[in-house]
Amino acid sequence: MLKGKVALVTGASRGIGNAIAFELAKEGADIIVNYASSNKKAEELVDKIKKLGNRAIAVKADVSDYNEVAKMFESAKAEFKKIDILVNNAGIVRDRTLRNMTQEEWNNVINTNLSSIFNVTKQALQFMGEGGRIINISSIVGQYGNFGQTNYAAAKAGIIGLTKSLAKELGKRKITVNAIAPGFIKTDIIKDMPFFKRKILRYMIPLKEEGNPEDVANVVVFLASEKSRYITGSVINVDGGLAF
Image (cartoon, rainbow, N blue to C red; front, side):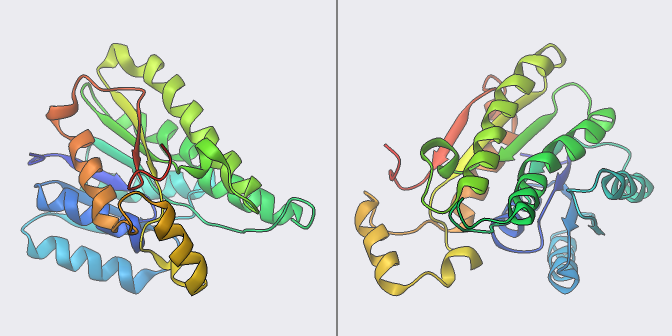
């Protein structure tokens, strides 16, 4: 569905971002793999994508830093002249109650999870033509909150507001802007969760299991395709029914 398209995925070296980049590539897209520190995993992903017959490059950049993002686009321009699909996926957690949270923990999460979307999207727009797709990865935590995650919830809620506002701004250019709100997905973030806490969470999820990164990636593929051309400003939950 995406042959001839170029996609940039932030935070793509592992977890949900890795799955998103690979699923987009399986549908024919060429991929810019952004990563912050996991060079080996990023290069492994690039190799996997190239084996599909697609073009791919890995570009290191801390997306919370506007100047590093500018350098990332300079590198990308050497290989690609356009960006059709932007997936703002990069994110971190620094969980702590607000009473005990440091200013650094607050700022790191807000800058990486929310300000990065401004940094990347603003600069990507100059390479994106009519019919482009912007997909932001939020979270159900941004809709309902979670104990010990005021910084994460604030950032993820901000992504939803940004998504809806930007959709109104870019509609005249036929660029759609949507968000995905994952629930509990099998990534490194929940691997260290205590056994009984995970068991309780599974009980609360109507489908009785955590999701896979590919469950999120498949929705990204749909939103990146022409099949979603009349959907913009929406938030799609991928949570096994946990939030309803």
